[in-house]
Image 1 (tube, one colour):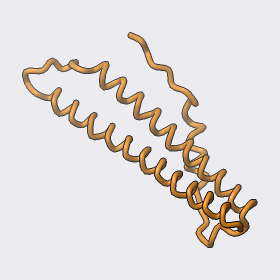
Image 2 (cartoon, rainbow, N blue to C red):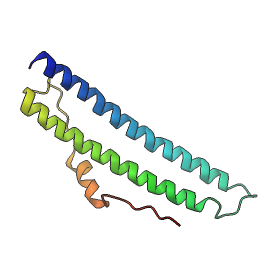
Image 3 (cartoon, rainbow, N blue to C red):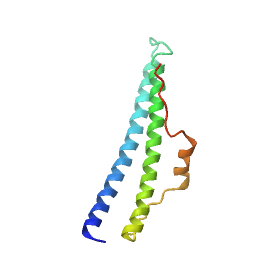
Image 4 (cartoon, rainbow, N blue to C red):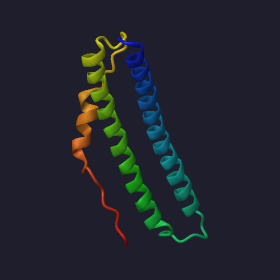
Length: 117
């Protein structure tokens, strides 16, 4: 493998892992936000349906984040194939993504529409 190709491969490896980590961080942030919203709504002075639309929108955002995460897994899988084809062995560190993780995406629609109500 040439030095340039090796550098490019290392950079892509680093960037895909960063993207996957950011995707996970977004999902954690959504979960924390939803928890805070639900706890605030349990205050006796707050109507039971307060913030319902906001919670619904947040749930849609969570679904989209999961879709993004699954798409990144697919990107990672494809990049691993390219690395094996173009650069030979993947430096002994194969990326194995279970078929169930990628197949799970087919259980959800590719795009989610947001209501404007």
